Amino acid sequence: MNSSAHRKELGQFLKARRAELSPRTVGLPETDRRRRVAGLRRDEVAVLAAISTNYYTRLEQGRMVPSASVLSELVRVLHLSDDQRDHLFELAGRETGRAPRRRAPQKAHPRLRTVLNDLSVSPAVILGRHLDILAWNPMATALFGTDFAKIPQRQRNYIRQLFTDPALRTLYADWEGSARNAAAVLRQQAAVCPDDRTLADLVGELSLRDEQFRQWWGGRPVVPRTGGTKVFHHPVAGELSLAWDALTCAADPDQQLIVWSAEPDSRAYEGLRFLASWAAASVMNS
Image 1 (spheres, rainbow, N blue to C red):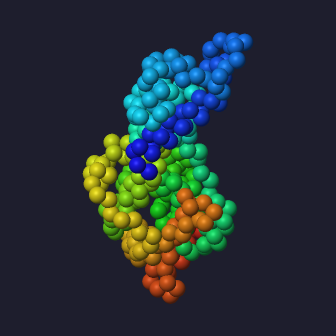
Image 2 (image 1 turned 90 degrees about the vertical axis):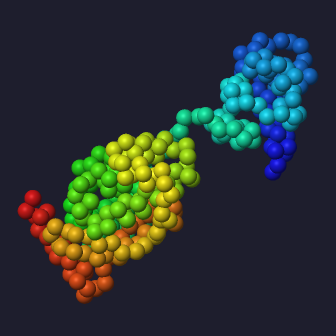
């Protein structure tokens, strides 16, 4: 769609919305005189928006593009919803200027949780948008040495743990690679959801707290992967070279099951079995 077509669509949108409103809706007095048009007249919209009738007429005729400030006034006068506001600003090629929105907290999808609960030897977590940790199994607690249940839900985030928990910097043999990959995933989400306030707050927090995150966020991020190998230096199980896979939930693409596993009879698999026994004994003795 070219700029002329955008202006025409903008004019048609304003005209349609104007026709849906009554004088009473916008605080104008009702009269007994029959109105020649449905809804508000152009001059009434112009007066309410503090612009000239000629200016507003040119907008509806698709002859010009309004400024952001005029658009904001029209949003108010025409009682536009958030979605209608975004559409209006998009047609005009302007930034919305609207405060980023907070999205509702996620819960682990039952299907992913079922698979998670069936994993007795492989550590696994369910990650949501922003890399929030939605669920985990006992092996994940043992591998990371973190009781995720004790972390407040709003703070229970994988990338936050990576950059703020000193123990994870020594647990990962290649902490920098893992941290860069997590930052790249978050950067990709920010590009898709630029108006997500929770995501913006997380990025702001990590940028203030960690110089490396700030540098990597400002530079060109690496391309995220959906699988590979991670080496852990575990204080109890020793060195563990584990394959990891990210399984996306078909019912909710914003959720992924991250699984760390090892081939049966391998040294890493025996290490995981030892870790599982140690974790079970720790629970019994606690």
